[in-house]
Length: 214
Ligand code: AMP
Image (cartoon, rainbow, N blue to C red):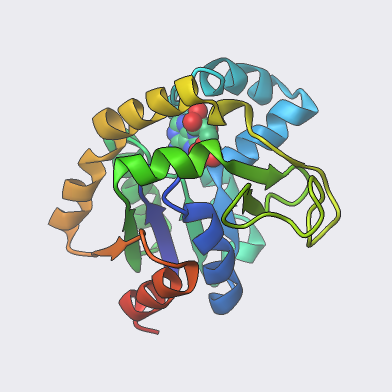
């Protein structure tokens, strides 16, 4: 099962991705998480990516595409994968389609999680995440049991540098201009499901499972 999660920043892709990956036994591949890991480790890719991430801009397409292609040929993707945060431009989507065709793979479903912008802003500014395992939290809606400590792995729960108000606003702009045209792109391909992401986590997850139909 090969899945893509689409949706504006803060729509809950990361949270839902954890549950989807667990249910269908497929790896959750978040390009944002991979970039953040590289930033933390100070790799050449991380140094390059940081320049864009801190401003809420997209990392250049070719860097991103190479990184995803390398990841998808690894053994744990043999039975499928869940991409979270990729593709994010039409160019990435076209290159991704070419990669799938070359490797005899097909996209099972694109899941588009949609939430109104005012709700998203609150979610993102209140968003926290575990530095070690990536588990997402929210200061009021979903805080960790002990402040600043991850429930799952005990790692540090922190606010991402790109979750500040100014950067968040730019990330929305970037989403609208560069990523939202992908909805029409996959509409044309006929394999997209639209999910209302405003409800409770369980309700949203149930709608996703229903749309996957397996
Ligand atoms: P995310 O955690 O998915 O919100 O991603 C955080 C940041 O990583 C984005 O704001 C971009 O700077 C970068 N990024 C993640 N995925 C991509 C992608 N597919 N293309 C370009 N930049 C990306």
